[in-house]
Image: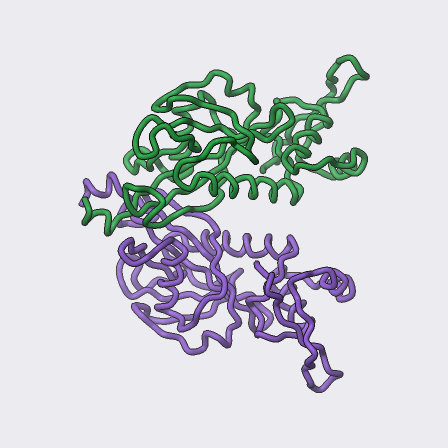
Length: 219
Length: 219
């Protein structure tokens, strides 16, 4: 085993699954059952299985499907974490991905090999995390913010049809700061990512027009 | 061997080393000696060595030091490339990095296990490339452009002291389009990345002030 470890590192994937709820950016954490780091909180992750997975992204989707009974619309790579000391089992590589999902799509949670699941505040998860997962989470939040700051719309966080207020609110929660409504809407007007529907959300206030992502939309 | 391949993928690194010369963004290519893909052009790369490397980035620096006798100021990760079919030796992961360097720092080229080295046009390298290296090169160029577009200055491409005209030219070459001189200089005025020196480049025209990167500068 030691001879193998000298030649071949462990290769795994970890996933930061983000959602917006309760006016906060949240991330899904799992409490581990198995050693190493049993009983500790961590991002969901697992080892690459070369005989099953066709790519690292496919491994990330497989690993997360064990925990969340939903097809992920978006899985994006953040970066790798590597070295001899980050996992007690030996020299290891973890490839970190992130995904965005409306929280109501994951209320039917499937639990495999985890003791508990929790949606935690992505900026302050409130748990000491296993391995280098605090660093991984910070990197995923940083990448998500940078993407949204560069003008990409986090439409995967929203329901299939949404109002511009909902969209603005999710952008504000990710960036951690309020946006000016009229300049935000001016920006959206030139966006090819949105399709305006002939439908309205009827609530207590005046009806708000509904939108959906365009077919060209990519995050 | 096959049993090991089922559990452990091959893990390697590849590096897109960029420079600006002859008014073009160039990338260093090597002509491979060994199989697989012998005699084909490729980005310089190699296998991770868990008993030598402290991280994937360290592996990238080690692999490139075999080919270029210089300490790299910047090595940044682009993304991973993975799957069962990208390397005939089996399921493999390559972690792609890029680096920026002034070309005159690498004129003393060390050649190890390569038949030839060439600076090629990064947008049109003019060779059919080994493995998935065409895709890798395109991804590295895309990431470099996105970074420069977001306002990061590619100072690692420049000599230790440089004029603002040199800086503007390198940005224009990366983006592939001319920039308005006065608005580019206005932007630079608010940049904490530059230190104005009390030195001037004296040439045929009027002396141009020299600058260096500030200590806070990061790409």
